[in-house]
Image (cartoon, rainbow, N blue to C red):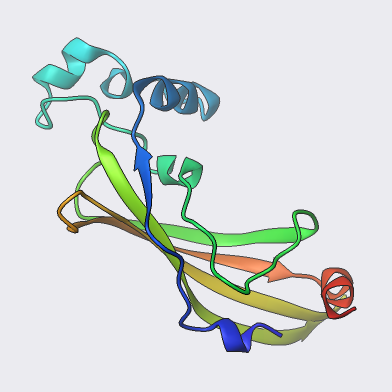
Length: 149
């Protein structure tokens, strides 16, 4: 179904690690460590500024992969992993993009399931890698039937 998408990637999109967004995200996930929003704590830290929680990149825009037309409803978020070269610093610009790593199908108790593996990346303004993530999108039999129509 999505095998022809393997290897395609989006254009890079500029995102900003905005202070207010980091604070709201930290509160939403229940992690109120002051390194995320207290400026004095950030200045005194080894990073010399505030940083974002590890899963904050889920809020970024990664652009669109041409031809990858997934529905807005009915998808299942499988696993997701993050790898960091360094933390995200509040106030910095990050250039993000995604790539289709793989697609495969398996039969399950509820029919044929599709598994779309996406890699996402965040780079600094010089093109240096800050983080990468891998996520699995599970496409149920019901959603597959809608997509085939």
